[in-house]
Image (cartoon, rainbow, N blue to C red; front, side, top):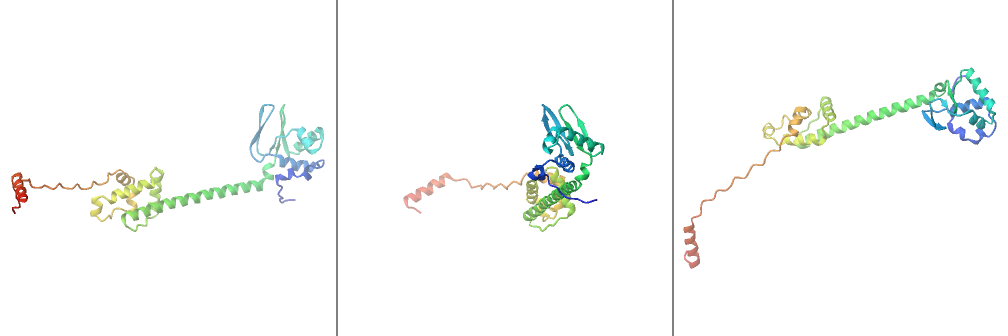
Length: 246
């Protein structure tokens, strides 16, 4: 018979599951439910016991108490399963580790679900990255157009070069400074800013040049040269004003 049913591990906490003495079939299902679904560990007599996926780190004593069996019955049951190649035992002084042989087969649906979840998470990460890249690209084009007054659109080549510069450590602020400095330059003013394109600023040499360019100096006001004052004439004019003589 083929097919699947789902048994949630919470079934183990249901009083109906442990209210009576276990049957052999119930004990077998219980072992699968008790098996670790991921790596874990615990300490026993000051020793760290590692439990891998598909392993049951329970002693025969604990299983006998859980199943309401004698320890000898548990021992024989596990040995029978081992003969049928359903489980493997690893015995030590402190405990017995039981490995479910076909655990991955029993958990195939769960594994498929985990794989699907991992794929979805990876796809979400990819979509998020693409969205962030697009936002950075649009910010660059918007900044260039606002400063220069142009209506540039760019293309995939520009976008690729921009992302390369960003990976190298350049920021949106760096691009803004470079565009601003180039826009204020007399050479570009004289050429009507025709060279200030998205391709221009995604070139590393141009970006470095204008990012580190000093802003143009403001023209200094020329001093006003006043004629020298003739002190003699100034004294005579002041005397005439004081005496009322025009």
